[in-house]
Structure formats: structure tokens, C-alpha cells
Amino acid sequence: MKTTHVAETKCPQCACAIDAHTHLSGDDATPTPGSLSVCLRCAAYLSFNDDLSIRPLTTAEFEALPLDVRLLLRKARRAAWEVVPVELQVGKRKL
Image (tube, rainbow, N blue to C red):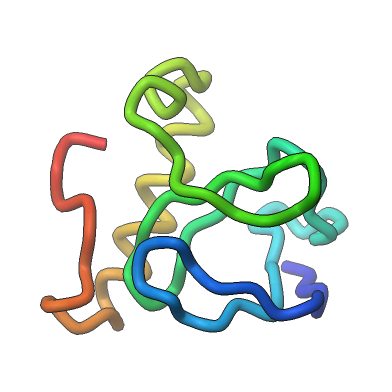
């Protein structure tokens, strides 16, 4: 896995400061518009906008993703939930 440090932004769900991104496959971790992420504090699914700000991924967007991408995001969310306090967890729903 490769981690890239970026300008700090805030998670739109929990306001956690985000200043790094790690690509799970080991490829370049620099986010681009449309890149997906999971907040390591609240485990929210996130998507990068054209200006590289982040926003929550909608249910419709999630459901439109290829199955392998949805499974990877779910795996990342489960890993985050192992360290995220219950009161900060979002999305313990079918996403």
C-alpha cells in the first residue's frame, strides 16, 4: 500500500481532518476526480469531486459501482469499524 499526503480537508460526515490517502492495491495513492475513499474515523464512503474536495457517496452511486469495487469498499469499511467508536459509525446499513 502506498500513502500520499495531501492538503487537509474534512470528512463531510464527521468533520475528521483528512490529510492522507492510501491506495489499497499499492498503486499511486494520489486521488483524482471520482476516486473513492472511506473515512477512517466514521467509516463513511466518500467520493472526490472535480476540485478534489470530498463528499459522501450516495446510495445510488454505490449501487452503480462494479461488484468488486463495492466489495472492496465494504471490506475497507469493516476494517475501519474495528477501530471506530460506535457513536461515530455511519452507514451500518446495507451500503
